[in-house]
Length: 121
Image 1: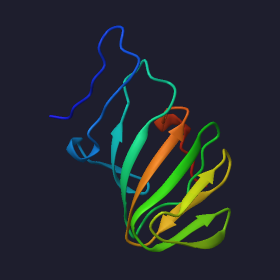
Image 2: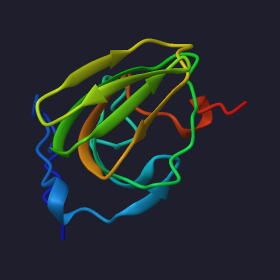
Image 3: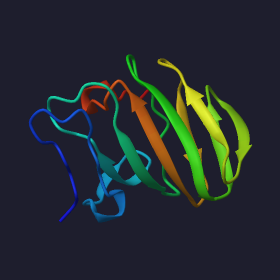
Image 4: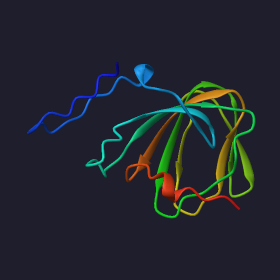
């Protein structure tokens, strides 16, 4: 079971990403931490990018991608940029984006991820 610490009066959360359930997403498969309903600040996702990742955008969310493993490209508003471990990308609302290649990334959505704010053309 994942370690999700949210005790009354605590001012912090702790999650063990590698122990969370993996779910399918537009980028591949993800494990999402800090998804408690009363947390609207930010979430953190451990994402394994798949070859069929889909370009999408968010109307409210800003995302920070940190490439952890692998190499490939990030597509931002139709332009490709090479990425490798320790490349970090800040993606503002409205930017159509997707990662391309075999990679593992950390994704930090701000505010907290909302599946209703994922848009496809």
